[in-house]
Image 1: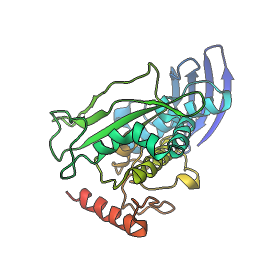
Image 2 (image 1 turned 135 degrees about the vertical axis):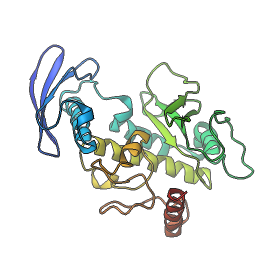
Image 3 (image 1 turned 45 degrees about the vertical axis):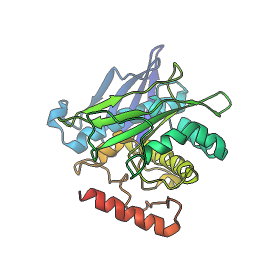
Image 4 (image 1 turned 180 degrees about the horizontal axis):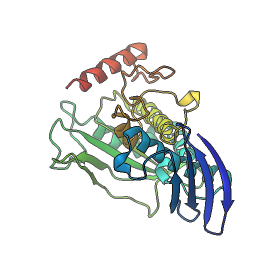
Length: 285
């Protein structure tokens, strides 16, 4: 991806973006909210329905990269909160720095929820009635930081699931602050053997989210973020399609050159191998 700011008015920043297919996009980004009122390109059909999946993704990448570039170069608050890698990094640091007692205070309920499909474990928050015993669900938790970068609050648990028509449904729990969170954890039911392992896993999960932010705007992540594992749900849904310019980075058993699984669930190299096997088995269900 390559970008050039071509002009600026009181309301808009104009850019030229060259995507990973070599096509130029001319866009305007609204400084007040990140909206893109103008987007022109001559490399693909104007009608999204007439583009291939890869072409549609290149168009979307150009729009995401434009917002990122305006935020980076001009400092305008145009990024969606859930694509703000700097905020995700701050939340990583905040979680890493928690004592065991404070981690349990903020994340103990979420830890129990993630383990709640294991035998003899009761979910702290019941899943929506529409979710069957073995059906897909994401447990989500918003994290809010104070001005010093410490955790100020977390939300109640949210749920994301697919209805009978495979349409996404979201059930939000209480959100304690009237503002966007700094990050949202979004994980499937899993086995986390201890709170200590969960603390490491949540930090790793945010590392995977940062990876996804780079990939979704058409960039190869820095080396420290070339990891395999669960990140952003929106990204994972795109990685599933073979006609998109991605690999299955969210799959624990994925074989992607330059990327590796770096979380071991507290069991060393054996833990990584067990996770890869479990991921492959889940894929074959």
